[in-house]
Structure formats: structure tokens, C-alpha cells
Image 1 (cartoon, rainbow, N blue to C red):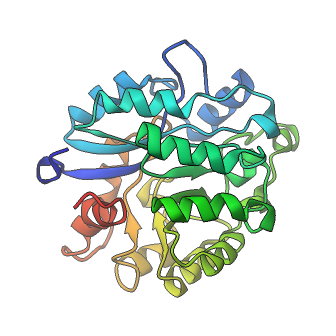
Image 2 (spheres, rainbow, N blue to C red):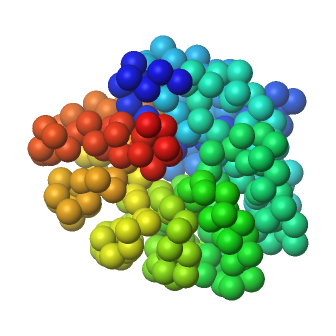
Length: 287
């Protein structure tokens, strides 16, 4: 990857369809999330589609799916296949993996994804995967990822998955409170952690965790920047200027829309390139 030629790094891009026609979530959850985000884009682009889309824009992309088989019963997309497919597009794609944390072999699976398939980090969605991040039963998994020296991206706050459905399809928001991740950050100081999204209704908590823990960062995906909580914009412009990163949540929110709205934020000129590119390059060890 020629980092110098990239205008930005999008650290939050979902792979929703594999090369066999399998989908990341079932039809009901897929439709509910599209309605929640009022998305008009193709909801299920393949890896090749994503690579072409981002390459045409001069933007690098971190790509992943989520393995939530225990919680949902839905067969996950294969992280190894995603990583291998991303390797065909190494000029623009950076693969993250996913493991179901409930599996007894989760740590072994994570190790293989890094050592055999070149995964550069991991994505967890506590609400969708139905687990409390700070439960010590998951600590062997974190120990392995810390040893592998790759970051973890935790979904935080509200989720569009299950939104508007009766009972939210059983998906519990409380698992995605960033204060649960604070425990993980404290107990694994060598583990780089990214809190995904404006963490509404726990935005102040996320800012506090990222301020207090040197190993915690925030990605700004999942919301149009024009709707960012005011305190998040202030923190991004000041004390967290080296700890926040551009993420879109593609295909639900496009980088085109995100970047257009980001241009309207009242940010210092020197802060913009940090958020768009350089903070992520450092966290992902691209430079």
C-alpha cells in the first residue's frame, strides 16, 4: 500500500457478502439496518466491489465481518476467506478478522487468522455477539490478541442491527457500554483498543475512557458528522486529536457522505489530516 497516495483511511467497512453468495446477517436484520440508516447504496457489496469503490476514491479501507453464530445461529462469513480476498487488493484493503468469543477455541482461531492469513486486527460487536467484554472468561482471547500485537475494534453504543424490531430481536445495547471495555483496557495495557462509533447514549463515558487509557482510541463511524454530539467534536478538536479516526460504516454510510459532512465541522486545519489518515496509520502500524 502506497500510504502517501491515500487521501484517507476508513477504519470501519463491513463485508456483507462472501464469494459464495452468503450474507453476514439474516434478511430481517439486513432490512432493518438498511431502514434505520436510510441507506440507498448496495447493502451487500463483495470484497472486489469494496476494493474497486475505495480504490477509485484514493481511500484505504479496513474490512471485516462479525462472527455471531452462538448468539444468532446465523452462519458467519469466513474471516480467513475475507483476509485472503483482501490480499488480492493489498493496495487498498486492510483485513480485520472476527471470532465468536463464545467458542472454546476462539483464541486459537484468532492466532491462526493472524499467523496464517495476515489479519491486521479484530472486530467485536458485543451486542450482536451477546457478550460482556469485561467478563474474565474472554480474557484468554484478549491475552492472545495482545501477544499478536494487533488492535481490537469494539462496537460501542447504539446499533442499527435489530433497530425497530420487536425487542430489537433480543439484541441488548448494554453489552456495548464503553465502560465495560474500560476494564479490558486496564487489564490489558498492551492491547490497542478502538471504540467504534459515537457511543450514544454513553458518549461522555467513551471520551473519558479514551482520555484516561493511553491504549484506547475512537473511530467516528456510523453517524454523519453533522449529527456528532457536541462534546465529541470538542474532544476531537483538542485533547483527543491524536486518538480519533475516520470511519464510515460502509455500506450503510458511504465515505462520500461522511467526508462531505465532515468538511462542515468546525475543526482546526491541523486536526483534519490526523483524523482522516495519520492517527489510523499509526494505530494500524502502516508507517
